[in-house]
Length: 374
Image 1 (cartoon, rainbow, N blue to C red):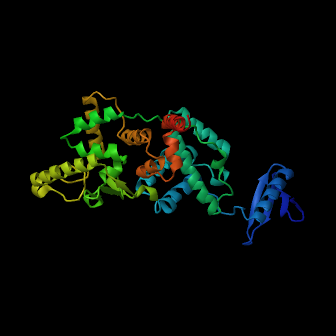
Image 2: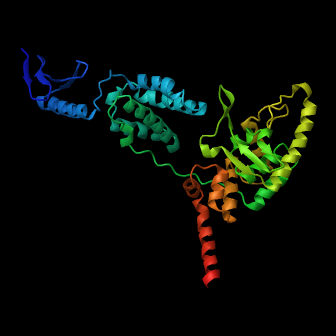
């Protein structure tokens, strides 16, 4: 026999033959949502919470699904159409290699902060870098934000779990003398103008390799950054627009960069004649011996070989960008100008990344005050 009780405004609560308690709540579509527990008090609390959520408009009434089912659909239908290919691949790797194997069978609505904390700790203990684990957490956070908007869940549990602490990697920068040595060693090689541009404009590797002659004005001494180039496994060389509006920018070229580009243009014309019919005219400033896009890995290999040749310590090509910014800031160039050159969306980013240069700048300011009022 089933004992049935009703309370005002609480839906219905009753006990089944097996002793378990059930609460049910009437929904707008005339369907009912059920809650189960071992005691009447337990289901009453669940029902009370559901009634509150119903009044607030946050009650989840969608059909339950596993995290695997949701993430696979989200990746292809919601994420892929609106993000860059590089972002899509990064998200897909995080989902297929980490989230689904560990949490895929958990019901989306039953994912808890504690489950997520255990998962992140296991990933760190397995040897993954904190920065990689942070990316995995960020992917899940973005996916669950959309789940909340779609009414599939009432809250994003990732927001309740802290991201792993990531130690900022100190960029290795070259001094002015080391930069001069590098440029001198590159003179006459395929990296001559490329390194000159890198060290005087602080452009990213992908921005330099995507640069076209139509975006360079040697008479006015300007270059426009409008795209970036990346090499992706299974996709080859891929071009994208810069991530932010600030990334699309106009750069004033130095005299040494202009002269290097003029030398480079002459060499490229000679290479074009030598290649004959095999030359592919893609109007790229920096290309291989047949006019095609420079494969980033090939360029980096030549750069690293050059570093070793002249006895400079190993450093990433990206560190040349940091070197350029550091040299400019140390020379007293206004941070706002450096921000615009780098293409940062905010001066706060520039000041945060290059805070190590600020102490010397502050000392310069103090010295100037002494000169004025001493």
